[in-house]
Image: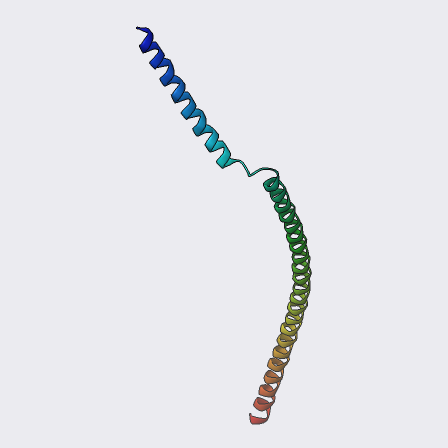
Length: 115
């Protein structure tokens, strides 16, 4: 290999290295923020997002407490209604038994007077 060929080979390698370096630098610049201003903006956005997250968590906790209170109230009302329904059923059963007893008594009296 002669001097000219070696020079062209080294020159081509350096040219390719410069193109690759420039391309990597270009990608790096596109990917990173625009400097301290963008960093401050990103920090402000992050703080706002954290504040919004805290507010949302507080609101969620309040809604969960309210839902638990409502659930316990509804459970108490359901238990009271079920107890009332049970009492009404027992009372209705006793009335049915009393009515059956009266019917039997009336039937006996009819049979005694009719016979």
